[in-house]
Structures are given as structure tokens and as C-alpha cells.
Image (cartoon, rainbow, N blue to C red; front, top):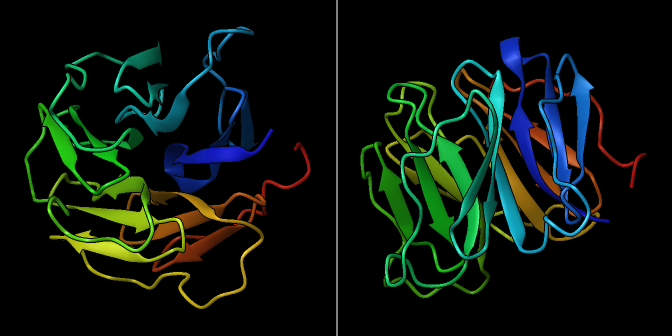
Length: 204
């Protein structure tokens, strides 16, 4: 199973890594609130935590959402909302709402501000993840090559031109001013103020 998503735990002292089979591994101080049973995980493409880090969401390619812990459902992607399958999700820490991002760079907002997207832009590689500012004032998208696109958030660097262990699979905010980018080989790279806690290679 390959890692497909990463989410930060409380106090920035750990994170969860989700695999293509819906299995969740925890690192640092992250706690497990549930996971899919065999046969339920087909089509899962992303993960995001609730504002208090006492729950998380898993999102399907079609835009459906499964919640664990104290998560709340504010809506799901309906037909025609975005172009391309849903590839990532990020929670607005201010409102508790969230954003869903598609492979084409479209962003659908649910109980969260709409700060723009890559809709209509020609991309050389698909978008694979989204992460948001801790106060909900903006978000970033990342492509499979590690290129970062910022919407009202500061650019802190990316993985373009870096040696990767596989295609980039996700980006996640550290809760302050930085972020982590993860590739399919389990390599997790910090940017800005984010700290490193080790790569997620061993379990896969």
C-alpha cells in the first residue's frame, strides 16, 4: 500500500499518514480515532483533521466524506462542482468548515471562505493535495511534482527539482506558518516553520 495523505496532530508533535488501502499510521503524539474496514476504502484520496485534532475526515475521489472522532459533515461535492476527481481536503480552523480540491485545481468550499483556485489554468501535472492557514485566511495546493500554488498564503518553498522517492501525494499545514510535503515513497519534507519527525517509510 502506498501513502496518499498526511495530516498534522495536536501541538505539532506528530502526524497521521493514510495509505491507498485506507489504513492510517500515526507518528509522534498522533492518536487513532478510527479507520476503514476492508472493502470500504476504495476510492479514498485524502485526509484532514478537525480543528481540535480529536477527529479526522477521509474523502473519496467522488467527493463523499467519511468522518471519525468529532468530525462534522458540512456538505459534499456534487456533480458539476469541480472538474477532475477530488484529490485532497483541508479544514478551516476558524469555522470548522473545509475545502475539497480536485486534480484540475478546482476548490469547493463548505462553511469556509473561497479564496480562489486554478480553475481554467493549464497544468502540466495534476494537483494532489491542499493545506490551509491555521486561521482560515488562505490555502496552498501542491502538484504531483511538488510544485506549490499559494492563495493568500506565503510561499515557503517546494520540491520542484528535488530528488523524490516517488510522486508527491500530499501537503499539510503545521498549524503555524509552515507545511510538510509527502511523496509516494513515504518521504516527508518540512518547509517554513514545520519540524521533521521522521519519514513514513517503515510500515509500507
